[in-house]
Length: 256
Ligand code: SAM
Image (spheres, rainbow, N blue to C red):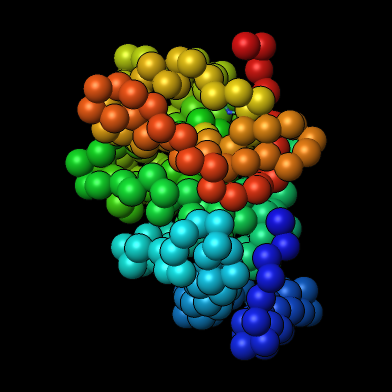
């Protein structure tokens, strides 16, 4: 989805692209490693782009700002540590990037928005379906209690597990398998986030959502535009669904 932007936002976007381009040129020309402060500066540019996209899509999402704690989490997690070497210089561009096996790390704006919609609390137990690089799980780990994340591609699941260990994310548990069926022994969950698009909401995930819990999931045609849904389960178990935004995710695969 290409959001509409104002002139100020366009200028900021061009500046940020210029910084990214410089980073790429420096990377390619000198082979020099970017320092922590360079990454932090690029991360600030990414945050500015997220703010612009939130404003541009406020009519859909119903707010002009995400929660400060979500933006603070986005400012802390080193996205460059979650992408392959060959795209590392573009780690803070506000777009999805390839992570191998035909999969992507989601656009930062979408990661921030989905996190905001989930409203994670430090005591919450969260399930993520679609670990991918592990970036979304790491953002959630900054805000929630225990994170359980499932990835269907064994190589990506292994890679993410090693990455969480290396980066010290001790409260993220990773499982390889078909996330359509959830993780029943670890549930019920206060929040469920699905980062691949299904053509329907998986009933096992609905069952594993705690009363009062929230689920964020893209639903729709696998090669078309999907809708990002926010599903809330009331205290009596009644479901309410809000259609938030048109999105485009890779499909939820598996034999289900
Ligand atoms: N959350 C990820 C991140 O932060 O990098 C991005 C997820 S990527 C857009 C979607 C991921 O969902 C892919 O890694 C894909 O292999 C995985 N996936 C697709 N179908 C799945 C399924 N049935 N169960 C678990 N993971 C699945």
